[in-house]
Length: 144
Image 1 (cartoon, rainbow, N blue to C red):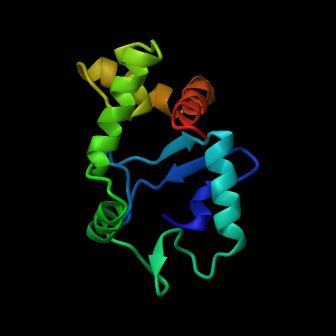
Image 2 (cartoon, rainbow, N blue to C red; image 1 turned 90 degrees about the vertical axis):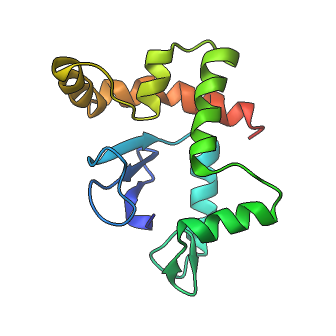
């Protein structure tokens, strides 16, 4: 994750289609940032000394290092565990549909026509705006 992937004025983070930190679908994905997440990014960016958001001595932290840091804080979940938590919260606690939560997580299901439609919609401004309230609600749930 690099600072160049963030668009502060539009409150978004774009995960690139290629490279080490690519999104699992193999296509670029834009994620709406909650006001709380944006505030954290701005604060971190003001003291940034290299291009990587999470780094050690100017090199990006790998997944094992991030998991090690989480364990040191008493967190036992994996990154996939966090994603599952978001989906369960969205459906059970916040009342969002499974279909919408799957889209929030970038899951694509169905036949070729549905998959193509999902990909097209996932890159639309409407999709991004549909996700913003979910990200705000998730941040509020986390106590931000």
